[in-house]
Image 1 (cartoon, helix red, strand yellow):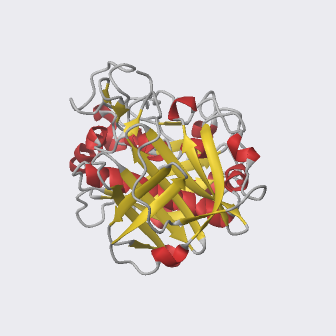
Image 2 (cartoon, helix red, strand yellow):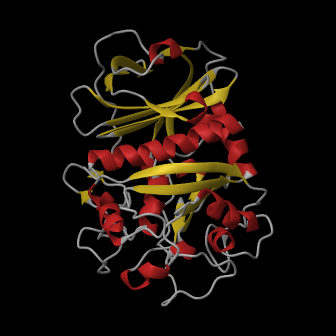
Image 3 (cartoon, one colour):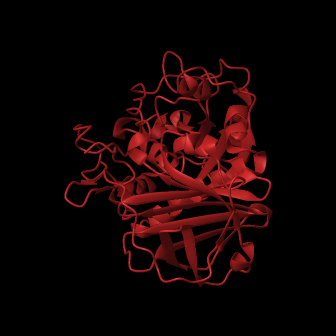
Length: 377
């Protein structure tokens, strides 16, 4: 059953701005290659191994098509394997024990040998693999392209659009068309588990390549956020209660008068009306809508929790995320951070929030940032 997220949990959530995961900024140099060993990826020769539609994406520095040796991910025990992302990028990764996911899926997390500020997250769903690799100076992603092939890409985060400023809520919150009961409490909730409902559009699913690929992307978004919490010694975790496609066509703007966010939160769009009942049925604390625009202007937007609206914030715990940015830019966790009271870095937003540590952080000397920060310095 959905509960109001208590203040204790929120205090943990806003600490997400202290994430130890390294999100590179500025220069995206390739890291040194690791010693040669059996690699997870099997190169596909040209022309089959070429993916011009992926290489043409603005944030893609380079890419190649591969097959994945899934036998190296059999079982769930900890292991070391080589991520042979490109000929000049072969990284030895130490993976911890895999976490089981619905539908016999698995989520692996680990670090690159010799790179303390690195993060590797791999999600397996059947014969599909989705993965993100973060380390100082570079970001890589792995996505299914169908037909047993996967694309390995190096990503330039600075080429992705920014997230919008969070949307404040009325004080006190105005009545909504479909109110939620925030007074009926289940047994004491310590805020350590945040239940999330994810809905996505047909355009997002088509861009992902298939329903299975879309679900793998959602699993990866949740896993990325949870690994970031773990790296920061934050005890809370996201729990995906359901992922559902909705018959909604993007409005043209993720937020506006109205935009996707306002349609999601309200009840004026007939194709999103059932989201509120789904939220109640699955007891979700927050709802994320994943959309896709061919040329996105923003990576996402969300309502922001403020101290003076905590008790009535449940009707505004909604966020919209652009598929292109959801994982490799960590926008999924970023927008949920706004729902939980966190803000952008001090270079962008100087407002005083409910906690001194609720802003994103940017290391100007070593050029890395946390999840809530813009890639702007």
